[in-house]
Amino acid sequence: MSSRSAERAPPIQSELDRIEHWGNVALAIGRYKLQISTKSSPSDVDRGRYVGHWRRMPDGQSRVTLSMWNSDRWHRPSDA
Image 1 (cartoon, rainbow, N blue to C red):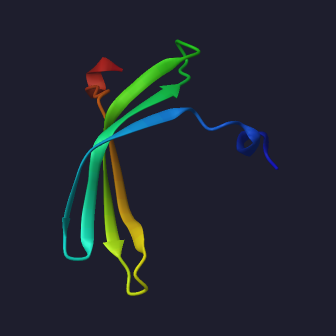
Image 2: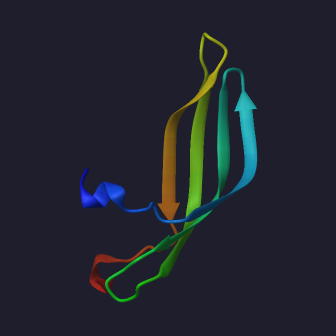
């Protein structure tokens, strides 16, 4: 086991804003907050939005078929 896999995953909080569905497809739309470590700080917070695409399969179970996350931390290349 590598030391990286032994590290704990960063704490993440998510809040579901709404669910939209039609037929066998649903979208879960919400916000997240994630504690991260950066070079400049041992603890920083990233916030953003997420969308999860769910599909009901032939066996009746719903499964995530696509998940997208978008951070509020948008920087132009010149900001680096």
